[in-house]
Image (tube, rainbow, N blue to C red):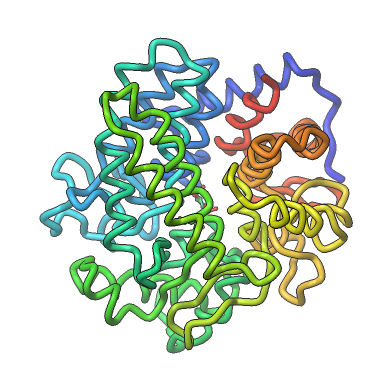
Length: 422
Ligand code: 2M8
């Protein structure tokens, strides 16, 4: 594998802080220089988590900058464009300025992303200092974000939030979306984009753009999503994160002088719906469009509901068995492949189709910790640190030999390393 001389903890921490400093624009952190020149929603939450102990004021600013992009509907967009840097799909695709509910001060995308933010604020409150004022300031925005998910995105009507685009999962090219994407019409736009072609060698990317344009042309209306939009999926990772975020909001409520009860009730609704709708021996995504059925493939997203401290013990045991088996980390040298390796679609080299990611490793480590699984927590910590020590802060990694893939100096890989080292 592509190695580099062993670095000790202090050097690794210095390197991580240097990457984050280089990727800081003055108001926010870009995921990586060049390829991702704007602020991405869940990337910023992971950056804030990693910075909580080191630069809490900057971490708070990171989240405030993201929330500047929040729409009046409560929707927190998956990209906020603070600068005119070129990126496709950029502001001319999303046209947020034409939407009454979008902010005037900044341009944004029209989709959302996994709602990590309340958890990030909780992390900051727990590990940073003097955070009560910040918590009071952002609490209403976080409550509005959750209200948006509970109303405009409960497309299945049973208490889960549906994603309406693969980009909303944060795991764009996950094999879980292959089948629902294949059911859409074949689209061939005229342009080509080399970076994106490498990620999506088939016409999948054109379908992504087509889906985004349909939603935009419908004025980003919830009624359109409910009645017409051809892509709607209840994803276990998105909803597992949302549940954890509701629990975090309940714990933050007293700090903000608010009642925790509605947030605990929301968490209970998600918990029940996850069990009733997404469990069939493992958690799977539910396709609300193609005849309303579970998509059989298991991915790293299947473990999202493990973030719930109240997940029934027998479910925890079954999920951990799958995670540690030869279907996932039992067969690879490094944690955790993003897709089960026995699946025909597994590809150790392609983004969310196989490689290991620092953010999902971190989420599973958090899940292991909330269930008191000390050995697994330790395995995920050391395995992830081995990846970045050997290959650097790459976007993702080959799960078999640990070599780096995607771009370099990737912010969440650096930030979460800081948390793993703590
Ligand atoms: C990737 O997503 C973008 C589109 O939003 C892309 O493929 O170009 C994903 O890995 C996503 O999870 C991440 O937030 C984003 C920026 O790092 O890149």
